[in-house]
Structures are given as C-alpha cells and as structure tokens.
Length: 138
Image (cartoon, rainbow, N blue to C red):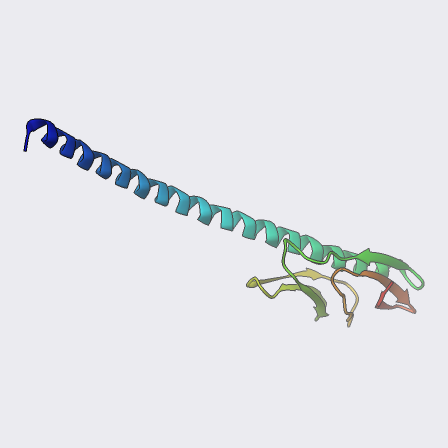
C-alpha cells in the first residue's frame, strides 16, 4: 500500500471515530433534554390540574358560605393538558383524576357531606338550597 493510500485510510478511520463520538454525545444530550422536557410537562400538568381542583373547591366553598339562595356558574374544560380527566368529591375534598397519567390532585372544601358530580367540558350551576350545596348542569 502506498503512503498516500495509508494516510487516506487513517484519515477515514479517524473521521469515522470522530463522527461516532459526536453521535454518542448528541444521543446523551438529546436523552437528557427529553427527560427534562418530560419532567417540565409533568409539573405543568400537575399545576394546571391542581388549579382546576382548587377552582372547583373554591366555587363550592363560595356557594356554601354565600348562604341560602346563592348560586354560581362554573365551566370546566374538556381536557387538561391534552388529557381527559374526571372530578368527584369525597370526604370534604374535590379530587381531580387524570386516568392516562399516574396522578390525582385534591382541593379542600368546606361544606360537610358535600357530594356532587362534575362533567368535563360542561357548564355547571352550583347552588345553595336551604344550606345544602348541589351541583346541576346549566
């Protein structure tokens, strides 16, 4: 083999090694970026869900404290962060559950024994009738 072809072969091997190292580095950087991005999206979804749960709990609380005859409308979004969700009440709390995501959040409510069904994407009327708070689709 001539010295020129040996140098070309060595240059080709060095270039392949350099490209391989660059690809490994790029893969590591991309993996780290995707992990951080997913964590940020998860935190954003959690904050939005907690905000919605507290919004519902605050509306129920407001109607309860408003006394007999007080009512308020509340519209819930169809999805939260692109995910379907459900809201139910139990034990003095409002629970917001996202089935496709391993999490649920809750908001504290005041009315003792309150129970109500909330449908996503619907407008609800929350009313205080003789001290009892009820939820109705508006």
